[in-house]
Image (cartoon, rainbow, N blue to C red; front, top):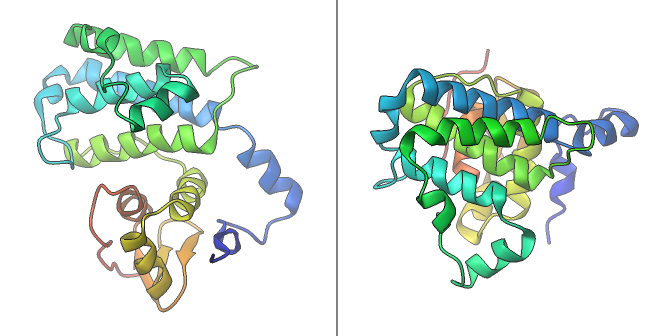
Length: 210
């Protein structure tokens, strides 16, 4: 297997710096959830808009995210086997005007000193934020280094078609300081790279490097 860890963002930093940044993603996760809550509160009509996934509305995507946030590890595993549905009955029963407060509550649960969030869990939030932000043409202020950490995690777990792209090309985030893959460079925005790796978009379009 390819050693994808070689392409960790800012991998040339001192080891102590990487460990401090990547150990716990609760704080940036809380910030993104708050941004999503604020967006829905100021633009409730956006719930009816379609996301980057055909047939999936913003309302659907938010309920999916809330379900994943509330599920335990075994519930997530069981859902992959078809034992649980998304959204969960609890989340499906929420009125639309309760979605923003529910996101805010999840954000608060991640804001405490003892809160923990893995890079995979944070990735679910970040991908949802990039998806909704792109669909609604809103910049939710994703931290460049955070997007790089998620990109590496997604690259490690990417299915064969997307991994083949990473074998043939190096996706270089022109608006951040990270890259994933091997081969000739393909400069693109960090958000388009993450969305591609998450299966929310095609191969990132080439953009001019600054």
